[in-house]
Amino acid sequence: MRYVLLVTGRGAIDSVRGALFIATGLAVPFYAFPVFEALGRGIDLATVLAALFVLSSFASSRRNSAAIWSWLALAAVVPALVLIRPVPSAFDLFRFLVSYGHWLLLIAFFFSSLSLEAPETARTRIALWNVAAGTFVALFALYQVVGTPRHWPGTGPILVPFQREPLRLTWIGGFSQEGSYTRPSSVFLEPSWMGGYLSWVLVLGVAAVLAIPRGIRSTARLFATVGLALVLLAIAASVSWGAYVDLAVGAGAGLAALWLGHQIPAGRKLLVIGAAVLVVALAALSPPGRRVASAVSERWEMLAKTPLEENATEAQQRDSSWLRVRNLAHTSRLFRAHAVRGIGLGQFESYEKSGEPSRLSFEDPWCGWVAIAAEVGVLGPPLLLGALLLILRRWRRGRAGGLEDVAVPALLAIAVVQQFHTASFLDLWWWYPVSVASALCGPSAPRA
Image 1 (spheres, rainbow, N blue to C red):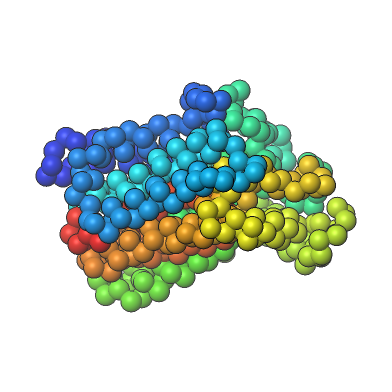
Image 2: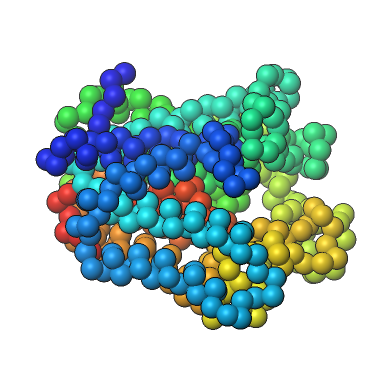
C-alpha cells in the first residue's frame, strides 16, 4: 500500500503536518503501551506524534482567526487560576503541573488542527486511515470474543510486558472469569473505551463511504465497507451502555444531516443503511452473536436490579450504574465547594471519599462536564463547548456536499454525549476525533 501525504500548495511542511495528523490517529488506540517514561509516567506514541504535529504547525497556526486565538488564550489561562493564593488545601503542585502540561498539549493540538487545510480527497484519506485503525481494533476485539472461552493466546489481561497496566476485563454475571460473557476491550484498557472509540470511527467511515470522490479507487469503498461492518460488530460485542449511546447519538445526528443533504445519491444512502441492517441481522444469528445478545439481556437485568440508594450492599451493586451515581454526587460536591477556580487539574484523587471500599474508590471522575467544572471551575464546561462551537460555526459556513456534511455533526454529537459518561477532557481519545471534525471542514470553508 502506498503512503499518502496531505499535499497542499504550501509544500513540504503541510505534507509533514498532514502525515503527523493521520499518524496520531493511528496511534490513539495504543495508549496502554507507552514507548518511554517521563516524570514517572508512561508516554504513548500518540502523545509524541501530537507534540510533533503541534511543533510543525507553528507557522500555519498564525493564520487562525481572532476568535480561535481568543479561545486558546482562555483555555490556557483559566485552569491556571487555581494557582492564585489561597490554593485548595489538598493541592499537589507537581500533579497539577503534569496534568496542566498535558492539557496545554491537547488544546494546542486542537488549535493546530484548525489551520490544517486538506482538499476533498485528503479529507477522505483521513477518514479511511482511521477506519483502517478501527478495523484492526475491531478484529482483535472479535478475536477476544471467540478466543476467550477457548483460552486462545492474547485473550488475557496482559498482552505485552511493557503494558501500562492489565486490561480491565469485565465479565457479565460476575467479577471473575466465572461470568457468562467476557466483554472484549481489544487493545484498550476497558471495553467502554474501545466502544466509544469505535463509535466515532464508524460514523466517520460511513460518511466517507457515502462521499468517496473519484480520486479514490473503488476498492477503497469496498475495504471501508467491510471494515465498518467489523467495527459495528465490535461495538455490539463491547456490551457497553456508553458505547451504545455514543453510537445511537452519532448515528442520529449523521442520519439527520444525511437526509437534509442533497448532493449524496439517494441510492447510496439506502445502500449503506440496508447493509448495516443486514450485517446486524446476520451477526445476531451467529453463535457469537447469540452470546452477545444474551449478555446484553443479562446486563439489562443487572441494571434493572441495581438500586440507587447510597447505602446499598455490595451484593446489590450489580451494575456500574450504582458507582456512576455515587461518583457524580461526589464530583458535584467538589464543584459546589470550589466553584470559582476549581480544585486544579489532576487533583481529583486527592479528594478520594473516605470510608469507601477500594473497589468503589473515587480516584477518577466519570462525568466530564461536571469533572472539568470541579477541577477548573465554572468556566471549565464553556471551554469545551467553545471548542465545539468553533467547529460548528466553521462547518455551517463551509458545507460543500462532501463527507464533512455528515461526519462533522455526528462527531460533534458524539463528543458532547461522551463527556456525560467519560471524563475524557484530558485525553487524545476525545480531542483527536474533535480535531478530525475541525480538519474535515476543509480549505474551502471560511475560518471561524
